Length: 545
Image 1 (cartoon, helix red, strand yellow):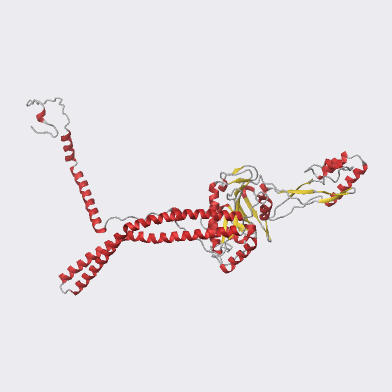
Image 2 (tube, rainbow, N blue to C red):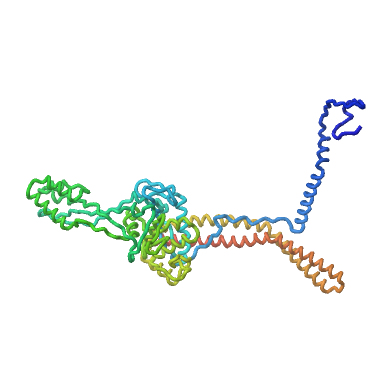
């Protein structure tokens, strides 16, 4: 009877009847050992292959460690804040330009671009989001890097709480009134001052429709603004001039802000005495002769207008105003990214200058600041002041000198002392933090260097010996006349040359540690020097008060 695998025929009673085919149920209990052995036999080729691969990998690892040495520690990664850290430029005197940004919104708010998340409370100015403020700060910092070659820094203007003065401007909430006329008239025998003011308004929503602004050149000024007549109103009267006189009642009829015509009309209705009425009529006649029947529309520079008549009335800081529009272009010059007064303290920018990133935006801002500092265009295509904002270069002998001379006279109008002080205090805090990180990093590298110094020395010694032996056997091979001996010595030379190369590879990471130690030592020294310069500058600024 043939045996079938996995069946233990000795364990069960079997009855076999010859010549009769019989089918009977048989219960066979599993034997774990037998099953495992059977599985191993079935998968023996696959298992043999896997074991062979593992053996080969183990052998390769052993050979690699033998010929190439054990892995050595890597240099610790430099802290992110210290990457690209540069010592500040030394200047006999730093001058400053403070920038405050106003992003012009749609009427009623838009929540788009830099205006996402803007919060308006009372008035026309809203707070920009943290993300928008970071973009503006980054733009200022990069543009400042260009001007620092002239010892001029661009820094953010600060509000009363010390925060960067970056705001959204809703044209719908903005208002403007301007007093144009005031006249002294005689009422009877009394001279008194009756102040009448002509108020004008500007339709900001129409002017900045859809966050767009188009301008046209008008000689030195840019863009006409239409100012429309609103009304004439009484502002005040001399309160005691009429006490005890027949005109006391006349005085009591005037109210603050009452239109001129209405005030006289009310007076004439209520004053019955003929003599008193005559005085009032004469005063009205005299005033009407002085006040024009119609006010002509006027054209003013939109740059000066926004800065002097809108922003300055809300913010008292001495700074350069940068107005950011969704889309700005100049009808005379074609598509533009920015425009500025020359000289002055106002800049218009396209929003893309702030949001686009790269080098183009900072160069554009630096270019417009140059106009504020009295610099005109130049032909050098690599210069910041080229009409196309071509590069970052500024001429030290001409442009830097001219810009600094302008700031000598005008810096107090372009940058608030408080903003300078806060900038320096912030920088000093940053540099102190950087110094702490640099010193901690230096200690890590120094510890690693000390730990591996002897190992590096041993490897260098072994490499030198191996190179020496390789040269020795190479010379010996050249002297031998027998080809067999020449081949023998050359093989010996190759063997030592390979050893020298292996020692060199093993020493390479340790040399990087040594190099990193020197670089970190220089970094710590540079940060200390930079911190010292900033502290001296702050002290000098405080002493000049």
